[in-house]
Length: 245
Image 1 (cartoon, helix red, strand yellow):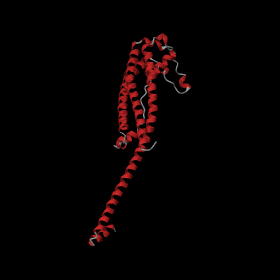
Image 2 (tube, one colour):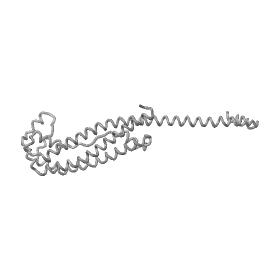
Image 3 (cartoon, rainbow, N blue to C red):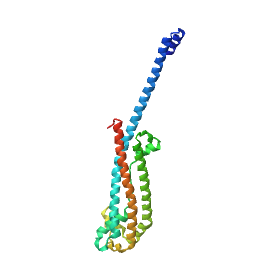
Image 4 (cartoon, rainbow, N blue to C red):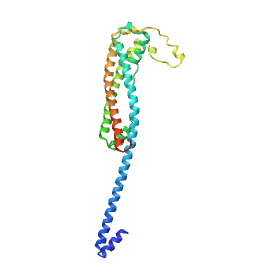
């Protein structure tokens, strides 16, 4: 319709009308582009908001899990410190069994929730998060988690090679395990006092070595905790800038 009208105006050499038609076309195209851009920006903002909310959930879950993990490391290091340094006469048998369970027997691995970050990374869409500080804190998380995994692998290899063999040969494992069911509990008939093992240089060396590995693991865990705090703060700030308080 508009094209036909422009053609008619050209044939009639009504240049004023032609100019007016041209302005109408340009303005219409401009408005169309602006509306499309506005819709795209609104959709991108909505998408970013959704990911930010999801990240907040992951961070909250991961922070709680990480705090539990750091607390477990601290408990284990306290037990290992006693095993590495205490005199046998200063530790009761029941306490010794708990120290052996926590210090030498238990092996816990870091568990965090990274569903949102992994989805963004796998899809190559990290850029949907328009806050560079938030992107960096997420990268910092990845680096620290990788470092923790390395120390966990070292810990697992060392325990499998040295600690498990030592315990199986020298200790009644049932003293450290909470069995389910009274019928199983009744078979724990070893009443030996193993506190004399504190005179064994092997248990002191094993405990000291594990304590040192946990030192590095704890340092990375605390750095990871700081990265989570940074991510949480950056997500809140970004949502505020998006008007999503």
